[in-house]
Length: 295
Image 1 (cartoon, rainbow, N blue to C red):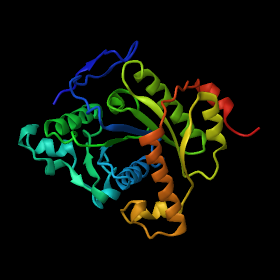
Image 2 (cartoon, rainbow, N blue to C red):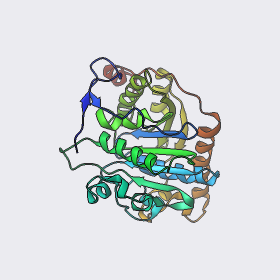
Image 3 (cartoon, rainbow, N blue to C red):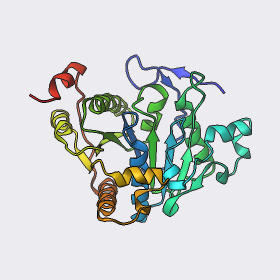
Image 4 (cartoon, rainbow, N blue to C red):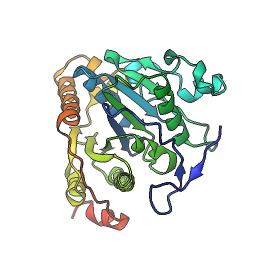
């Protein structure tokens, strides 16, 4: 397995993993890439958003793009085999695979795929993402899908882990109301701005997570042109749902749980019906340092 590095159309000085330009997701599907600082709750957000889309009657596919392959376990209630592991078993002869070897049905019919990744220091995750999309195309598994959600590793937006941006219509950035999360968000905004010059991806908005207040996020949004699409406070029911290995939609419907469910349903409706691409301008690192905090 080899990876080709090239200087493609992504911008001056860009060195990226070369993707097959013929491999793309059908125009009919809404494709969302979820990014954010490591540990901010991207997988929880992605899985509950997938569940919400399914509740709206959409056919949903979630693709986990993290070597930890833990993106979809709350949907499937287990850790599923990864694409890279399955391909290795057949010496990368994808024609020998069946869809059920690498795609698994989760909560309310959400289909789940974990790309996995190469061992640390031995390869590029962008290659794995590209091979995953290629495999799904070869088996005609994207043709009747309404929504595809890429759950992407940490805040890594360089090289291979920017690969989902080449397929996505919109990027959602998960952040908390703190400096480190917003600093990472700014880097992601810059990456999307670069990709948007040559690809269809656009900023969809911000998901505020584990945050009682929004004052720092609002400061950043007002300065850059971003918009908060959903707000999830530090709700214990969300933490407990992860421990129970299930989505928030499978929890006992207390008042707190119902409020979270409704916020996810509202986010899914916005992304389906009324999302508008945002033209945001990232800040210099020093500008963020000066902007955030208390007087």
